[in-house]
Length: 66
Image 1 (cartoon, rainbow, N blue to C red):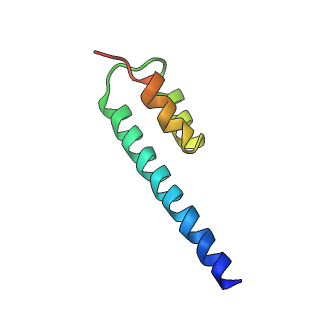
Image 2: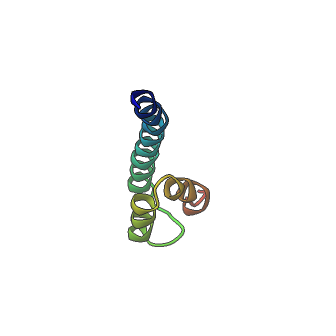
Image 3: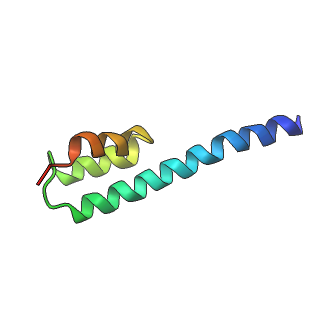
């Protein structure tokens, strides 16, 4: 049983770290970027509440080329 618990942590921990890094980088980019596709408050909700997919969607769709 102990082996399964360690395996779960070994799988879940990198995903949690990846999600936190994406969340932080996306929020920093959103604050620094003046032009976005849509209101910034909507992108904050998307980034924060739609786990790993939210920041990726922001980087693909939300950023406006300058």
